[in-house]
Amino acid sequence: MEKALRTYSAVLRLVRLLPKDTRPYYSKYARENFVNYREVDATDAKTLDELFQRAYNHSIWVLNKYSVDESAADNLKKICCG
Image (cartoon, rainbow, N blue to C red; front, side, top):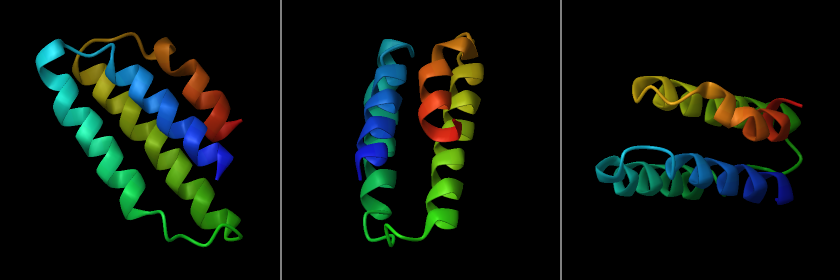
């Protein structure tokens, strides 16, 4: 649970780097995704790892879409993939 909260916080911090008019959409999108997966079994390490990797990959995609340096996601990478 702690890792999920840290990941969610890191994603929301990245949303703040996006253009102002896109922030509401991506913050809502992030919340919906985290809420959708709250029922995942906390002992299923494989599924959790896949979800954290997906959160990281999608964040990188969005940062690249808006030409934000993907190094901004280094903290998220440490949480999700480290």
